[in-house]
Image (cartoon, rainbow, N blue to C red):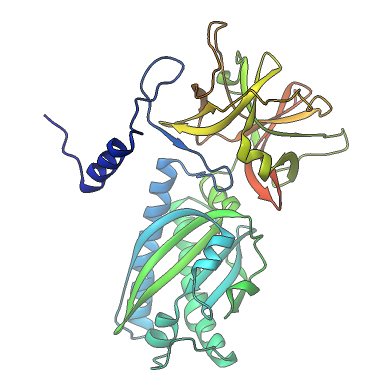
Amino acid sequence: MSEVLTKDEIDQLLSAISSGSEKDKKSSDGQSKKEISYDISCPDFLTRKERQLLCHASETAARKITDYVSRELKIKTHIRTVSLDVISCDDFLKSIPNPTFISSFKFLEEDGLFEVAPEISFGGLLKQKEIRNKEPDGLDLKIIQNYFVKPVLKIISGTFCNLFHKEQEKIQKISVYSNPQFTEQIPYYEIGTLVTYEVKAGEYTGMMNLFFSRNLAKKLIHNDETLDVIPLKFYGQNLFLEMGRCNLSDADKLIPGKIIELNKSLVSAEKGFDVYKDDKKIGLAEILLIEQNFGLKFKDNSAVKDDCNSSFNTRVIIGGQFVNEEVHFETGRIIKLMESSQDYFRVEKDGKIIAFGEPLVLDKHLGLRIVKLVKED
């Protein structure tokens, strides 16, 4: 049966034909692969199954919040989940109105944010006619906090704990603000999960947003912080794509959550990431996603300088592969790596894997947050 293309797919195809850019991409094994660029500053850390679990929990919470508002607050309400995205805290805060009702909180010892649009808070809940650009006063904040934010966050925490088989734990340190920029509890570079709800409260319709830091999202789904066995796919590789390097002394104790700054700047990252074969730097490449795996695409390597990373004892590896001597690394060459796009980047010190972590941006340099430690022998 022939495949029916959507309108968007047809438009993209016609655009590619007219520009002459539609080419058959091939990886090192000679097979055609679908490839897209990978944004290291905002990595998608959720697997498909984890997304499904979080979406299910969010939908369940939406139904319970609808029931609470309709029954206890006597407001005809309907709430549904409309999206689940991976986004930085900074991008989230810039996307919501100012003023608004936004709360910071602690759950499972990790950070989160909860925002209710003015249409819902002023119009649907407080039943005020003037809702645009209105600055809420202290009484408004107190009413919303006590009668909506606290009960709703209690519902959310209970729902997520039940579905993910966690011990019931209260949400703590709830603070309500009208200006999103005052919520300094979560660093601006923090990558997290944003659940967006559509809320119909009375005659008003607006959005409600729940932001979980990456640590919180992962802690809900997983408990392990140490790795007993290193997967076999990390052995036998002779080609590596590096994120950057640093120096770690014996006194630098790594623990989950610790952030290390790398020598790779954002400016140099735009030019490409270092590729090594048999411990020799062979070029620069951009990061790709090829199907479900990381990949690399070689850039113009004629201007690659001598390796200046030999003074560092620790490196962060995005992914690797085993390649034969016959493989040539010309500009545009694409190689699919062994690592899945959901794998953490690995940390090697003096040639030994010691930890796994997730990338982040620290001002003008790239960094890594430690997530899992490798169990010592």
